[in-house]
Image (tube, rainbow, N blue to C red):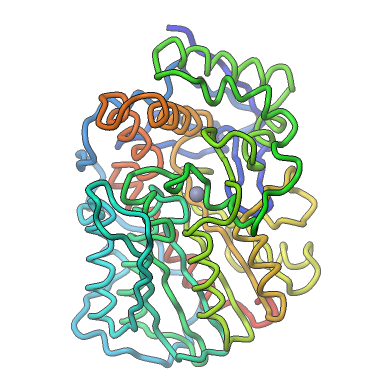
Length: 467
Ligand SMILES: [Zn+2]
């Protein structure tokens, strides 16, 4: 077995300014969980070595079923030192049960349709207002799809919190799980006066229903907030050279995978780090329609629907906070926040947000950002909500290390474009993609949902001068 050994300084954590902060390597002390098993550990001090392995995550397990987890049912996430409560609006929980420990990994949504049905059913039980926006894109068997919204609190709130899931389709499993738990929580505990919350379910319903991260046109929705024309240059420096490595024009095979790991290793060695590789890949490209991180030629249906919903939901509010739940990058089952706002000076805001949320926070325009992704939801919020006090935070909850993540994305994309519908490679790479964006580990699920809830709790207690 040939492995590529990648040495990364433990401090070399890269954050994007907007979404998809690319975090290379495993941070000190963290656990990387894959498919119910821990398969790597960060060291507690200094630089560390991560054996990236030649063949990615292996995806040996079939289906999207639960796997046994020896820690299931034990312990739970902390909810002890959260912000103090000031919630007065009650919604009459109608018997909806709630406890901080009731996150049930066995009740993980099975697919988009199950997720949507459960979201709507629970929202009704919690007394939420429901709205459904049908989209033209259809499901794998021609089913109708929609973006659904559940709202609690005043119709015209002073402060609106928008909790979005599934901008990257397959990441909608975690988005739904967080929204379901948030509905139970709010039905039980209520909202602060003057605050409304709207949960946007399956912002990219086609991607969720088809188990892809992108939309029906292979577009990364979080690079697609581009209006009528894509930005220039069409691809960041370095993407053109990486294109044959990232987007081979043939069905996936073992040799491809070897080339990928070798190429990724070479690129990192040549550039003496991962920053250039990360920048070239994650900034978004508008040149290769079948490639990874393609931002499209114009704003697509998911993007336009999301814009329309956010503008409508926040129309009356002076303060708007968007929490955009993603999975994939960063420490396993730990949420980091990536985003921007328009209140106060960026560096001052950054320190205060880190203190308030007690977790990693990166802002677009602060000094520690190494690249600037284009066409993102965050940028659009900054532009379009600039008449309000606005804070956008991508809640990025980690799964596996980024080279493994990229490997799964690459193989799934390759199979999608170069093998027929229903082929074995499509099925295999599709399952592997779900494994890295919605891991089967019960512990990962339980901890990740609790992380999302913790971010929501702290957002409800956010001081007015932060957003
Ligand atoms: Zn994402």
